[in-house]
Length: 277
Image 1 (tube, rainbow, N blue to C red):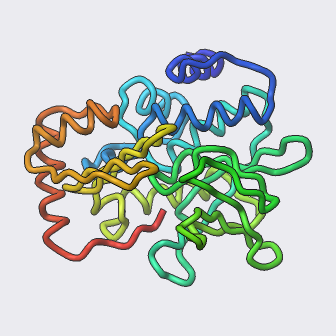
Image 2 (cartoon, rainbow, N blue to C red):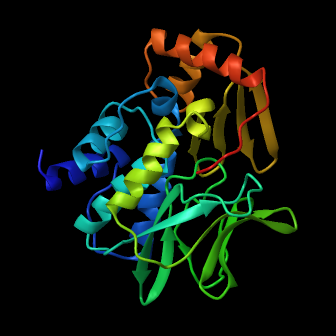
């Protein structure tokens, strides 16, 4: 398929049609993407080949419903946004959830200017991440129970933050430097091949809906909503496969589910790894 066909397949999967660039259209793209196309580490956990070219991304994420993480999801959306006339800018970020004061550049995002205001577009951070474009003005966006902002911690250093009770949780920070596809390949290789990377050691999967976030981490499945959260323990490979397919929209075979479940049991028997992107 050519680029136009690939973009059309992506929009069709989201139930959307092309339209002129606007905040409303961009917000619709982001919210539908994170609701329909799962964030997951299934590929790294199974040792799959994960090329980043557009055709491979559409086949893996849209057609075969294997999910993906930031270098895949945000790489896919970046290409589609170009075709839709948004002129996105590639930026790499450092995930701050591990406590490491200087973590590696293992998170990919996009910046899109609308009416002269740059917005962070991120469909690849998983359950804690934004479900709308977030303006780089400090303005809060989101719902009553999921709110986000971009703060300039110091000149030239920007931080994506999520409302955490009466405080703000810093998810990742970034600088407006020049990045290219080769930088993404380096971060992507570490994230899905290093035995120390969180995505190779931990099974995660999530989708973000308007009224709830569905989130799997190894053998714990949670549904997070305005009133709190409900938690379920995963006790078999068959249950894991059903959750991945029925609740998260991720297709795996029975044999793959068995491998993932066994790996998750091993992971939960020791100390959890630190997230890195």
